[in-house]
Structure formats: C-alpha cells, structure tokens
Length: 146
Image 1 (tube, rainbow, N blue to C red):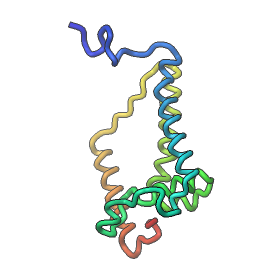
Image 2 (cartoon, one colour):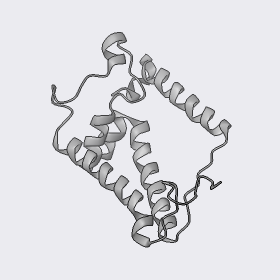
Image 3 (cartoon, rainbow, N blue to C red):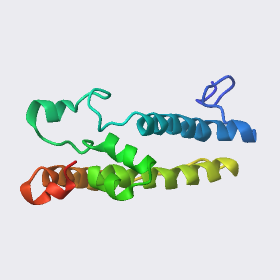
C-alpha cells in the first residue's frame, strides 16, 4: 500500500525549480496584494474596514488592534507610526520577511523549510501576546495602544 507520498498524491515532492518556488512566490504575491490594498485604502479613514469586535463590545484592545494602521504606515515607510500603532504587528512584518527569505533560499536549493518550535516556545509567544494585550490596556501602557 503506498504511503502518503505515493503515486498521484498531492503531497508528492515538487522537483523542478519552478515547482519548488511556486508556493513561496504565491505567498509573496498574496501578501504583496494585501499590503498594496492596505497601503492604498487608508485604515485611518472610517468606513473602509470593520471595527475590531472585541474593541467594539468591550472597549479592550486585542493584540491585533492597530494592525491595519501599522501596515499602512509600514507601507508608507513610517516605521515610528507603524510601531506605535501595533508593535507586535510591526515586529511580525520583519519576522515574516526573514522567514520568507529563508523559505525561498531553501526552496531554491531543493530543501524543505522545517521550523519546529518546542511547546515551551509556543507558550512563551502566547504569554508575550497576553502581556502585550494587558499592558496596552492599562494606563501606564498607553504608549502601546493604537
């Protein structure tokens, strides 16, 4: 019985250069399209994007609040405004870029991208997001609020 990478499987490894680069380049195209849209349609103007449901219902900023304003400022080269709108999102843009470049280089060389984080790392990331969320909603953390 053939395994998950048997004949005709969708998991079959792509061997050609174009096949290996298709997914990272497709992701880049999607992210570029999203950033182009956010860079064109200003989230600071009301009515273009939905309001965060958590903010609307409770008045509490979630870890993603300010992310669209951050992306808009980032696209326009205003890193200070991007960081002040959402520090976590701005850091995430740089992290995404680094991981994407690593992915592209490994795909070019025909090697898969494997990023295996231990559960402790995931718990740590969750804890940082929780701390960020709590602090940005407290009076002394107002600099982190969008």
